[in-house]
Image 1: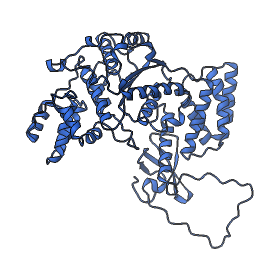
Image 2 (image 1 turned 60 degrees about the vertical axis):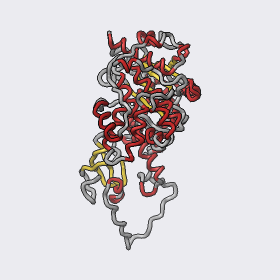
Image 3 (image 1 turned 90 degrees about the vertical axis):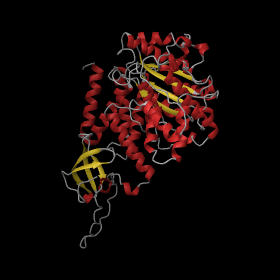
Image 4 (image 1 turned 135 degrees about the vertical axis):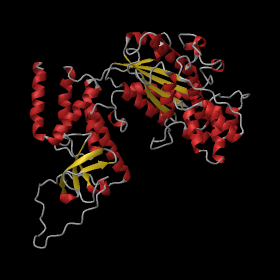
Length: 507
């Protein structure tokens, strides 16, 4: 919001989507503000003043002595800035998210919106994921290992796979492993990232996340609660059963919101949740005796978390969804690990493979997987049901040691390489990015001519190795467009110089 009702040059403002910025110019009689945001230096945006919280300006007075001017034949109308008052909510939202996506691309970050708009060259790979999901929905489960070099678009591909899973009726979630917080040797932290990030296919905004919506939906099914929570039932789940039971009875009591939050923290694997104190409080409030088992972060209890994920996939199916799809972006999976950490990373992958794939196709005996914890934990299986609809995709940067270890666990046909982009893919990518600028209502001084120019430039850039992966291409394209928008007189000389250097091989 603004800090005043009348804008002025130099004023500090705050935008709901783009954060803090400064007014650098008043345009169109003050109806439109040119703003430079802190997160987007040297890239001013023209925004209606009302969108920044300022009062609408008074209507301009009509001059009494001048006649209306007639537009001369052939004169072109300058592009008008985006006017949020004249746009439908859908168009305005698309414009805002398109601008956010462009800024993410400019910074070399994978945007979370408009993924389909700039996805090229991955049709065959996404078709494989689609067939995997169809199989997983029938209770066969499934797993895919995606291999690619740095910058090949693995994260982008995982996000597309996640969207495809949502479109196919699955709950979907994604976690990114690292060497400090979400380490492969820390199974509870990985599960926590996955559980709290679950998204729902019947949520058009994709803003609902975590297990709460699933628990709320399942808590209305009395028979389902009984099957999962009774210890003598063949469908009993030692974690989800008690969680669902308590979740169903707490709303009937008073002052239980805090207990519900603590219960959700526990079942989502939060490190702040203590099962001992929570169980004592729940038993006191409900007079029930359902037990809450501990969820530790020991390296040898990965089986507890695949048991939970399998249970969530089945609970999702019982609630009307098709299952659960898990995406794990491993990025530096093996290169940052050594010794015991690498050993437990192997255990992580093998346990997930055992939870997702038929034991007959595994390259190891899943019964020899470590099952640590207390005596009761060691009795729990790594898998909830044989026919659970659980699907997982692991993305891995090419690493000989990593691939060798994975190949000993799962069949070769479960691996999928992301091939390098062709020149045609890069040309198509440039056209898709330009379509984002059009969607963002950002005027380009060269209009559609820029698409043809970019096609001519991208081809030699790719051929000579100046552009080697999608990440480089996206940054290059957005930089060219920025020059076109802000310094159009520099575009042709810059491109001509670039082409000459590419021809001669000069740096």
